[in-house]
Length: 524
Image (cartoon, rainbow, N blue to C red; front, side):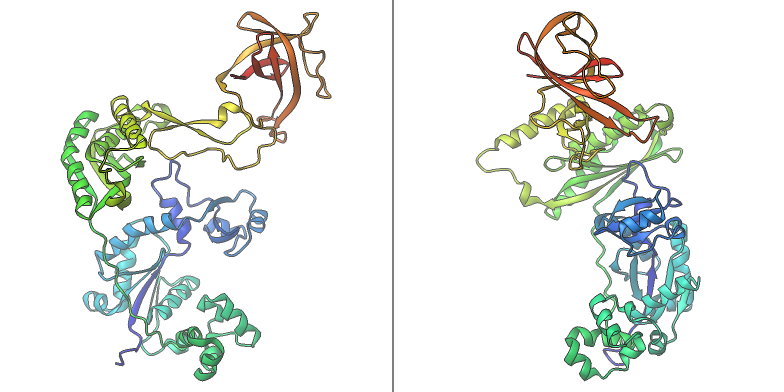
């Protein structure tokens, strides 16, 4: 065999992997149901969609507007390559238990040399079926395997197997050229070259492979020569097995299971020390920590914790205790933790070079001292003992105030950057009441001030009564309407904002809704 001859390759293809990764992502607070119509978007175009979305007419490459026109109830999620890699990594580790030497081509597509597994399992098809069976045990359905000369041909075989409903598609040795010949030129996944060849009348890989090599080099350069070789079935690329990452995680199994959080935290101390020491040996620090708790009855809790700096052993133990405390503290329908803790697993979700977190030689700065002080207070009071403010989106001031535990990333239910018609412009009030204060606004004659059908006050506001205290109104402005969900009778809301200044020169932000008055905030 020539040195550059194609090597028998086995490719495993996971159709619509971005959707699969989304539904298997345990870090999401609310995992998505794979049976729902889901589309993953990148650059306002569909890159992957679920079977339910495909049944509604959604296709890969569609623009967002066209996809939502086909399926108005489509769930749209932004593409996340980090999520795709993170969820795919343990799948590859499961494959390596049956056949080592796996190369990750991209998330959802991996290749390995077919010779070794074929000799061990008694044939190429038999080896592919063993790997598909292992993936089935991991809860992955619809995976396709392709076996051919070279990874490119094996990938095309796996894709053909998906259209013919064959889990394993075998291309005999030496038959790559004949197999590839009728496939469309778009199979090369080079849009620029495919478009140019289509204008030249070249529609299939066989027609491209029939072109003279010198002419291809003159017109398309070395890139064209490489794709020309792929079209002819001469894929000289070797399968390059990945280097397994170092084992940085730690697991502690409790037998019998523990039911007291402090006992679990005490049992994690040695593992936390070993976890931090293992990272230190590689000159790394952990900036994001994934904690997985497993209960005696199968309950499972997974969460990624952040840190303003980097985790030490004490901070790792704190996160385990806080996570268990939050699970046990849930009530009602959210209460899922009903037994002792059988296993705890900790692993780094993100690491950084240790040199970026080294302490200063001549003392720490103000920010570092603040960090250490707040971290100590948080360790004593609990996860939500120290909160930092963040600004979210919305029309009402109370919903724009978001309190985030120290060290966590702000997760906003309503994005601040979106347009919010009716929201209050700057400058914003200094004091926002968590619950609006009921007040009363009357005119000079003591009559209640209201809003008529045209959005005008029934009479000029003159007196503001707050907590039983009457305040004269010296100046006022408004009303400014705030209209929400006018199309939904059950959730619609219509109110009017006012700004008033009382006799003590205190400015108030008032809201008139359903003929009643409330103080939303105060300008301090």
